[in-house]
Amino acid sequence: MKHTKVKDLLNSTTTLQEVNAKGWVRTFRNNQFIALNDGSTINNIQCVVDFENTPEETLKRITTGAAVSVIGTLVESKGAGQKYEIQVNKLEILGDSDAEKFPMQPKKHSLEFLRENAHLRVRTNAFGAIMRVRSVLSFAVHKYFQEKGFVYVNTPIITGADAEGAGEMFQVTSLPLDNLPKNEEGNIDFKKDFFGKHTNLTVSGQLEGETFAMALGQIYTFGPTFRAENSNTSRHLAEFWMIEPEVAFNDLDDNMDLAEDFIQYVIKYALDNCQDDLKFLEGRLLEEEKSKPQAERSEMSLLEKLNFVLENNFKRVSYTEAIDILRDSTPNKKKKFQYIINEWGADLQSEHERYLVEKHFKCPVILFDYPANIKAFYMRLNDNTEPGRETVRAMDILFPGIGEIVGGSEREERYDVLVEKMKALEIDEEELYWYLDTRRFGSATHAGFGLGFERLVLFVTGMTNIRDVIPFPRTPGSAEF
Image (cartoon, rainbow, N blue to C red; front, side):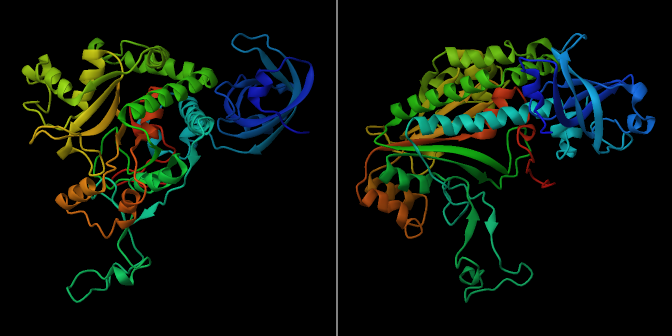
């Protein structure tokens, strides 16, 4: 008999039918009531066992974590809390779970403990909910861009280019590390390496994405990216997923419009398709907040916060205006910020971004026109900026609780200006000849942005540590599982 998903059983419109359900035991009460979950929904289905006619040996094997198959009649439930239950006629243990050793017992576990058991944590309600929401958001990303006529491009994971110019990249090599070949200058001879040159894991698919946008018009990438940044924070991962659209003929204003529309679309899609999971995560967040001082608690519940982003236009503010606001702010004057803002040109930290969003404007904020010297080489230089205060057509979207969630820009489409910027930063023109070709042959205004997918999942689920929204987090000193 083919089994039916728990989600479909709970949404059934007919009862008194014989059904087969398979899943894992969450709890087993009174030698009679199995709470069965198969991952299709956060909700369990209650399976009522005829314990008087079930062998004692079988009952002992119904433990938390055990995989079971039940065949029985779907009936309206007599107990509170569930619409339907299964009156079990036949029960089979598919896989035992030693109750003494199984870590995911039905009790509250710390997030640190669950991270240490990342291979099993998805069996808890919270992580099952997070991963289903992540899956739905991932689908929504593709759905949005496909509906808009974007072409999905798979940019390389292994690259010789450093898109950000930060140099925090993982090297890719097949050379023997205990006996590295050297050239005449005494440097590592990468000509003898697998690719015949120095290569890394990508930090962004943007540069390659631009080449496709200049032929296909509008493209997006959605793939893994890597940063060898030694940041042990709740907002950083060494391996994460990036969404990067790139659009020919778009300027900075078009780019801001696209990013805002995209974010609102995927959040609405999650709200419409993950109601049970988001309701559970909202309750979980409320419980977490109770242990915090009143001043640190969120002013809005999770669902209120998500709807707030849908219902409010993002506030667009220039970097210069933001600096003036921060410089005159109470936390800056009273030296409550860890990084005091004294002058124009300062690189904004997370605390400054969150102040603008959460305290000053009280809505999502798009900052634009940043100082050129704190942004990447490929961003378009603004015309008519005063010497010493040159700005670029950059934009960052700031969210409550997260800080920066999107970074993007209008790209420098002028060949001469781009070459000058690369020279000033000592970026090898020969190494990026292919990128410069997009400016040599049919260059045009174009723009794009990058959205760290995990930061989006963090915001939508209400979690506070980015390690809890990716299946197996990769962080400094940790590459378990």
